[in-house]
Length: 142
Image (spheres, rainbow, N blue to C red):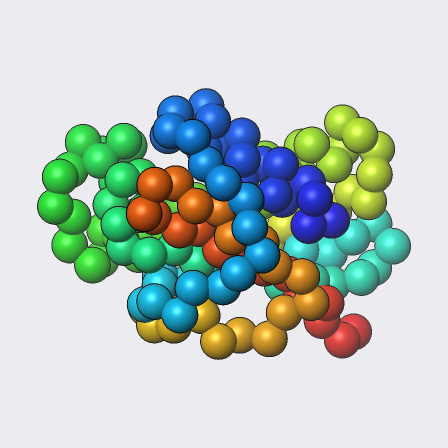
């Protein structure tokens, strides 16, 4: 499941941001904007997907979508929610096309603007220049 979300994240970086990226396993301890979105697989498993980024990454997105060079924190939070929805929604389509572990998605919610310290089962970080995007997933108990 993480693989389709990572694929969707990389597609976003390639097709929207258009700057080379690097995929790695390390988690940054810097302050990040963190959103989550719950998903439920066709088999009934529930997972929470976390999308976290430093403010520089989200400012890059805000500049791309809104043409704002210096967004306020509220706008960066809105962009975080939008990116979570965009990435997980795209991953859902990828999973459906591959007919592998399809799922339904919930509504994204903003968690906090702080270091990423949530429990997770799997995680990857995408680095674009000095900016970071953390994608993590945690299986929830039914």
